[in-house]
Image (tube, rainbow, N blue to C red; front, side):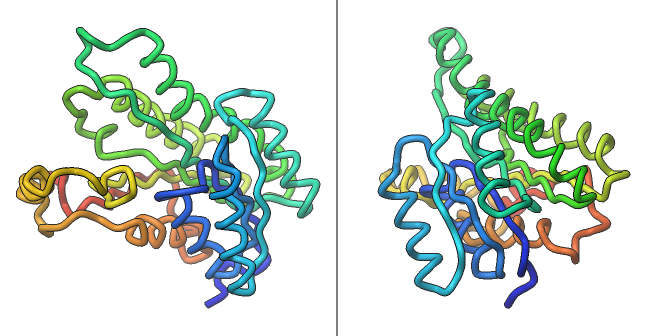
Length: 249
């Protein structure tokens, strides 16, 4: 399987969870992968080592992509290392959940900066090399919370809804240069962050999912890999929900 052979991908927040799964899947399909991380150096290097052990190419680069200069440095380092960037996956994200009456301003700012500003920072940095090569795939990891909202997540939902607006706007701006911009909106996904959720709560959430189960990291990674491929060359400005039917209709 080498649909992405000779492609170079940057995945932000790729040291664990969904980002890790995306990095591994893109590498499995032949892409050279830049594994971005903020503080989990050992975890990021483990992802790189797993890719290399499987015969792929990868490197880890530390950067807090919510910072404009660091995001630019990440993209420049990737270009310096490999000469091009074909795929950007904006996955870096965080949560600071609380009802608005209890939410602190810093909780709002942190989530908006980490989730939304980071995506804009990386998009702005990657546009120039992609326009020069007249090819690119930008994939933003949003959420069903950005489509339907979620109680106690006004900051998170706003950031993810903002990513959808960013996706559609950039899709219009960049289409003439053969750069597609799409978003993937996961629903409930089983990761290490949700592993300790009480079984009764998980079962109750399942009742709202028509397919009757939570998603896996691989479910999301497959969707991203498709949108990154040449088979998706006529898809842009689209939000692909990977949620078991949670928000359909």
